[in-house]
Amino acid sequence: MTAPTALGTGEARTRLHELTVIDVRTPGEYAGGHLPGALNVPLDQIRRALPDIRRAADRGDILVVCASGARSESACRVLAENGIETATLSGGTGAWAADGHDLHRPQSAGGATWGMERQVRFTAGTVVLLGLLLGLLVHPAFQLLSAGIAAGLVFSALTNTCGMAAVLAKLPHNRPRAADLDATLARLGNR
Image (cartoon, helix red, strand yellow):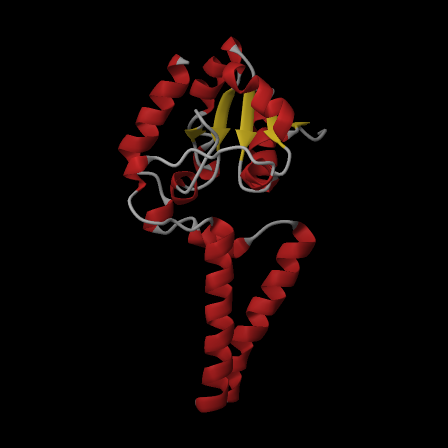
């Protein structure tokens, strides 16, 4: 299977009014800032959204976005396997913001939200520090926690996947409420 079509931030911005933008990040990341008009369908819910995405694709082009482009490429592959052609945003919302384009932050987001990358860095750092401290104060075997995180980070870099992000995405603040996802799917199907 070929890689999905990638749009640069400039082209995406120029065409934003004609695209249906699907943000596949977690609801917490989406609330922290997303492309104007983007609809949040988390990656783990993409199969549930297939009928609505198919209807939207029948009416126009779909742009799939995430923080860096890795999750949106995964979503594009799933959609392509189901006969839905899409494009991904090169570099994701990180590149969008770095190029000076505005991210929409809803007023009702309530408090600061952390992106998935920040959540992973915080969790990995905490576990490494905990492993080192417990290894010094309790038993040296606790240092295996730190070694496990280090191995996971190396594996993550080599495979461009992140098991810790997959686990963190299951936390309540990163999960869509059923009503939110249903409303998003209704909007997506009616676009």
